[in-house]
Image (tube, rainbow, N blue to C red; front, side, top):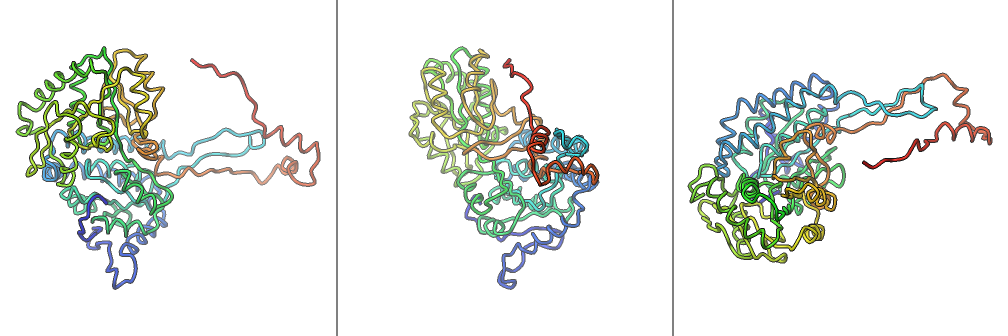
Length: 492
């Protein structure tokens, strides 16, 4: 739902596109596709560990076999350097696949729970069950990672899945639609392509769970259409506070890498810097040095610097360059959709660069007198996907951590928290709902079913809860159900 492109939607599943002639059928064009996947799910085939393992292994083979086509597609979409593609699109997904395979048997086990006195002889547990037929809608900035990582969780949890890649990253969309279905069980997995019209029609169907990654505006549309069972990773403006005593060159290296990776089109990239005026003066030459060291005197000539995905996004970023004053960079080339690594200073909080997610290699700096003012500034805005802080003082780092709220938190680096499968990834409030990655993906796509299995015997004990009631029965029943406070809570 990212552009107004009206390419007809399709869902390659062998020779079947998955989309019927809506006029001829007199119904939504995706009804047949969704119904066929639901029928497959009802057979129970995706619930077995063997099927889950086979599909995860097949997804791993897809990544291995199609590595070069993936590199080519992303070079075509946004001239993304092969190093960045392997790191952020292929290896991250392959790690998720292998991590799921290594842990699936543990994840699938029933989870025992505490019991009260009445149920001591019974069996009580939580069973992780698949939701059913789920829809994954992906964005264009990491067009493979952000559909396949959720797919790993959905497969591991035993669901049938429809994937809707972004039409903006058209070469990657084509690759996924044409090549991925041949690796997966065509009865249980499908790819649908197209623009807003197709996505809107798709959302008219009943899904048991919808996983959406994109901007908050489109997220609200998806939320309205879906109403329930929705996980969104939306993004937002991620603040980065730089303390006065920091090693400025180290800060600059890590900021430039995080802001310019994928040409800044990363939802967890640092979106703006908060620091004192004195720190800004020290940071600017360090940022200039890092940009030159990474991309040379003219980043346009660097093979390691990507391009903006579309003309619309290019125009959006270029318009933001009018905020404040350009201190570093600022060059653009509309034909190439090139925006140089850029640092803006003298930026006011009310200016456009501070009102919208930039999603490009542009870093505004807003000066604040101290860390308390920085915290107040962060808390006065919508809660971000990530809060970053650079500081040698661990107490200052913990101060920012404890007094702010965000989907995630990073100290003394940017983006690297995304490489840990053991950490959940997701937002809070305006920056998203729900989380995924590793075991959290499995949990996201699993319904935790509450189960209690009792014996047919021991009716004498059960009779205590049956009428006619008495004070004796009341006392005995309440004593068996009551949970007592066992001790004091010690804060370390």
